[in-house]
Image (cartoon, rainbow, N blue to C red; front, side):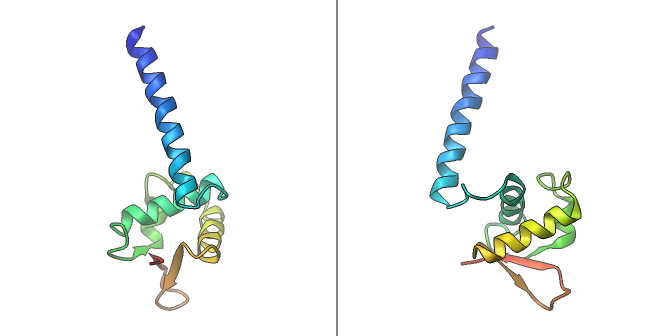
Amino acid sequence: MTILMSSRKLYADLLILAHSMENDLKLNNLKNSDQNVYACIVLLSKDGNRQAHLSEIKAHELTKHLSTPSIYNALRTLIKCGLIKKQGTARSGLYALSK
């Protein structure tokens, strides 16, 4: 029983930390799908050191449950918010973190 309570307490503490970080990064007004796509791009781009390709984004653990239209909507939202930018040609499918 102690282990279960510890796991629940840890989960609650992590959730508070996550909400605090969302506020700090100005992600708190984004939908969950937008946040997942943003986190996916952060991970795939090695925190901004490379570009993330759309095919990688669609296949990633954080986003593979999202529909293609949801991913495109999230990408548009993130671009509009200035969190990411599209790179290459209109059809390249490359995205990078905004600096």
